[in-house]
Image (cartoon, rainbow, N blue to C red):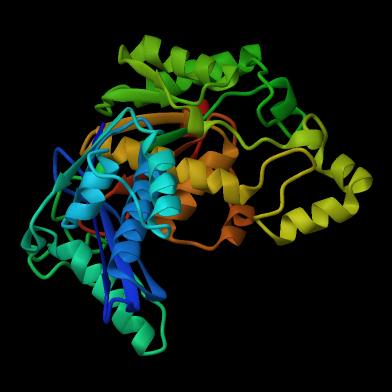
Length: 366
């Protein structure tokens, strides 16, 4: 995957009130995948420019840490220093350059390109938006479009006719396992399907024939890989694994029922139910799961743009994807139910909000 990071920073006084802006694009399509901006208080242009680069690289790493990246800046200083051609002398620059280098080391490759300011308008606009927002006593929000961008078509909402082809994700929960049959917490333990679970996977494959699926993407855990294989044998489409689609790590609660956890860890469960940033003992929080599932979604939407994907995953990641599509609060996770081998469908539009078309469909199992 190839990404472009455009970054800029400015200071109104040098030093003076300063801010940065950063944009991450798909290098092939030019689509904006992420924006970032922040008011920095009083500092210099150079500090703001480095902070913009750091923000852009952080967003790029969130989207695709194994990407090939081109970082474009209108700061000759930052480009030459990060390329290793100029020495970094100023003490304020050294820790920022080191932070940027550590981020850059995560990517498969990275190169730095100087561009004239007129070709860096979107990052420059974001930096100025952040400074303007601070001057008005408010926080920056990503809402405005670049001044030189073509107007976007109206958003597809489900009420109006789509203005572009979506990327369609068919979200299939894995088939039955011993733990799911007994309604026990099943996280990253690598448990297999039961015979009934295998049959459910095959039934899902039969039901999905004719849906025009281009690729199957599965969690790395055995129960999802087995389900994906049953479907693939019916549909004859390729299967790829996405690590970030694995289930939440439930830590010490693995294998216990909800009632058993409530009895043995009452305070920990109350905290977990009240705050998505709280993890089970030795486990993973829903906040952490959301972050990695969101990253997986972003990568897949770029890689398989306007295609139809079957994603074979687990209760929590599928609920996360539906929640992200609805822009619903974290508490919505507790308001959804997903049966084993159930199917949910979400269309993701590049020009507007996502549309949830179905949830927990199990007609193929009857």
